[in-house]
Structure formats: C-alpha cells, structure tokens
Length: 397
Image (cartoon, rainbow, N blue to C red; front, side, top):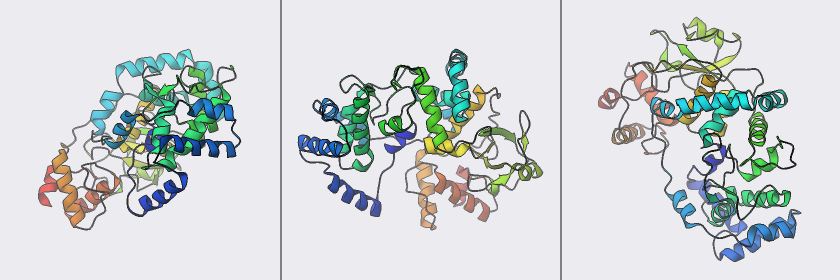
C-alpha cells in the first residue's frame, strides 16, 4: 500500500486518458501478447540490455487474469482514521517494530547517517507494507508487470517497470520464474517497483546484490535512500500530536494552510507530549476526524508520506505509527462526531457538486476536494469549519 501501489490506484479520465491512449498506441499495448513482448524486447535491446536477460525475463511470461481482475475492481479507501490506525498500529507491529530496530540497529544507524532518515520512519513503512517481510504477495512479478504493461489502461506506468525488471534480471537481482510480490508488481519487504529498486537500491548486506525480498539490510537501506530522494529533511520531525483550544479558527486546519510553529502556539495549540520544535518550522494542523477527534501538527517531512501513498488516512496512520515507534504515547481519540455512511457521503457529495464544488467525483470517499467543500459550507452556515462532514451538516444542506 505504498508508492508503488499509487501507480495501481487512480483512474485516468478525460483529456489525460486521451493522451495516455495515444502513448499506449505508440507503445504497442494490447493485441497479440507475443507480438507485444517482441516489441518490449526490441525496446530493451535499444536501451542496451543483454539479449540473454531479455529472453530469460520474457520467454516464459504470460497474462495473469487475476491481476487484471484485481486491477479492475480495486476497492476504495473508506475507513476513518480511528478505524484504520487502531487496526494497523497494533500491539504486534509495535512490539516487532521495536525488536527489529534493535536487531538491525547498526543498519539503521548507517541508513540515518547516509540518508538522514531515522529508524522509526523506515520501520513503520516496513511494518505496514508487509508485517516486516511476512506478507509480500504471491504473484509472479514478471507476469504481473507484463500483464499490466500489455493492458491498455495504463501501459505508460507499467511498461517502464517491465523494462526495469529485465535490468534486475541482468544484475542477478530478480528470478523471472520465482520472484513473487504484489499483484501490481511491487517487490520485497518494503514493496517497491523495479524502476525504484534499480534507481535507489542499496546492497545493505554486502553480498553484491539488492534483494529486497530476503535481505532486511537491503530493504532498510533502499527504503532510506528512496525516502531521501522524495525530499526528506534530516533532523526534522514529521508529525506531532497536539491539543487544540475550543476557540481555534477551525477553517485554518488542513493541509491547505501552513503556519509557523510559533503562530500555532499563539493560537493556543500545545503538544500532548514533549516540546514543540523550533518556532520557525512550518506546519499544518491535521484534524482527520474533526475538531473533537485527534489533532496533529504535520511538518514538512509529512509531505514524503503523501508521496509514498496518496491516501490521507494511510499516510497519517503511517506517520503516527512512526511517532509511536519513536516513543510517543497513543493518541487521544477524543469524541468525534459520527461520520457518514457511504450512502450519506455520496448524497453529501451530490449536494456539494450541485452547488458548484469540485469534490472529485461522487464516490463516497472523503478526499481533499470533499473536505474543502465541507469546510466552505460549514463556514457559510456558521458551523465550526473543521472539514469533518456530519449528519447535521447533510441535513442543513
């Protein structure tokens, strides 16, 4: 459920779909599968990859109908923050995360020295993605990538991954017959796509290979390198739970607003544990379930989580998980107003869309567009504009 999975997540529409369709036609998606693979081979040869590695990768490739089925019926992320975070940041993951940070302390120290990324951040992703390597997926990676590259829905995303898989075979880092992973082609304990493994892979255990499936040191160092590439800022926090006063101007909450820590402190925002960082550091106030639920200051490093995975609930949970591994206490769940059912959320989105708001589609998902529209309507109606939709707001609309 990470950056790789973001490639498997969106549906392209409108003009973008037309653009991608043109690209797909140029890339030769669809049609006879063997002819498609021959086209991939010619492209791989033009990039300087060896014919031996190309043939070893592609000769046994086949279409995986289950991959296509999963790609077509991807579920949507509709859990609340409290629901998802309580399920995902559990005792097992906290206990084993702490144990792994101790077991691989020297590797984590090297990762932080070289890339500036602390152990809890890497460990949280490691735990959420695969339960520290226990659940990595059982789809043949080459078949999954070839299937999605051949399919004309998003070949511009997956054809480069298939070419990168050939490069991994050439390096001896992928066995085209035996390497398995997630249905969208992610590999290893931190679930990365071949292009990112080729670009950011680090041989953490010194065996001359980057094998994220079996080597925890390789996975740790590669994840650190990749997170650094996304813009991680060394020595800075990423998320901190805070307490908020009832007088706070709630419309200022959300990722759309950034203030200095000193500004938030002047508004009465206080940490629940530990001190606030430097007053000049900028932050956004996150209220994933409104003003009566948990509250967090999200610092610039939080943006890296949004690049890893675009789901606000997942990223906030992952960042919170990392704070727990770093020693923070459990959040105060508060007493948030009940959320809306799927049917209610879709009814709300229909009403908001009818008023001219861009809610990103009538899908029942509380995304950034819907939150912004809710905040605007709450302000118009004289309600606390915290962006959390309730049955009361729906009734007023």
